Image 1 (cartoon, rainbow, N blue to C red):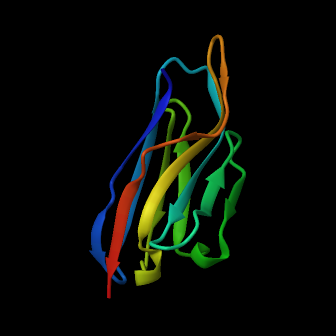
Image 2 (cartoon, rainbow, N blue to C red; image 1 turned 45 degrees about the vertical axis):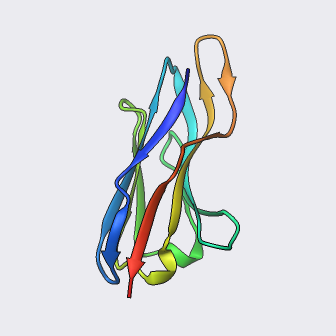
Amino acid sequence: QVQLVESGGGLVQAGESLTVSCVASGIISSIGRMGWYRQAPGKERELVAWITGGGSLEYADAVKGRFTISRNNAKRAVYLQMNRLKPEDTGIYYCNADPVFGPKYTYRELWGQGTLVTVSS
């Protein structure tokens, strides 16, 4: 069974930094795009950043210049380094992978369970 597991969330003060990680487990041949989404209380889930296997990147305007996404293809992992955090960055951060190629099946739009990031003012 292929799944995504996030870690690294927590409580920080405004201006501080935090890194969240996501690892894909299971029998995987390769992964296309990996990314991070977040959902603040009472709001819809939104894109934070994504990265392709070849290293192409995209960031939401709200995090450009503060967040850095990276991945380690060998470890099937994606990371989000978050600097100069603001209270409005608070939310549940979800890892996403699409597609995930296994030996027999291709998985589309896999999601992790989420990790909570809370930024206090």
